[in-house]
Image 1 (cartoon, helix red, strand yellow):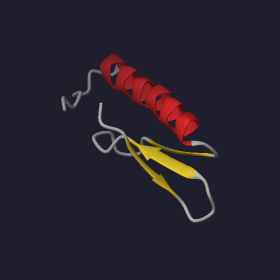
Image 2: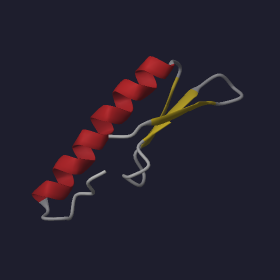
Image 3: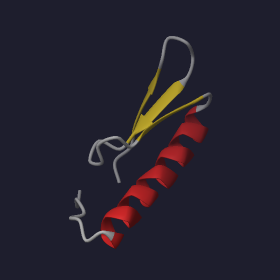
Image 4: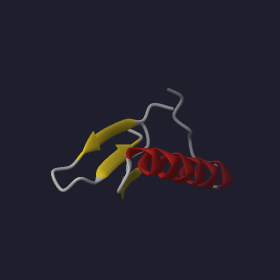
Length: 58
């Protein structure tokens, strides 16, 4: 799973999974942002599987 990170001007970190629209988090540290975006991505993937939706393979 590809994760992109970027630091905002206010010091917060953004982490997102480009292949999963809407899977983006803001946190105070890069490590927390990466951890939480992984958790969110897994929840989104699990929800899609549960509802019979297509899973993007990247």
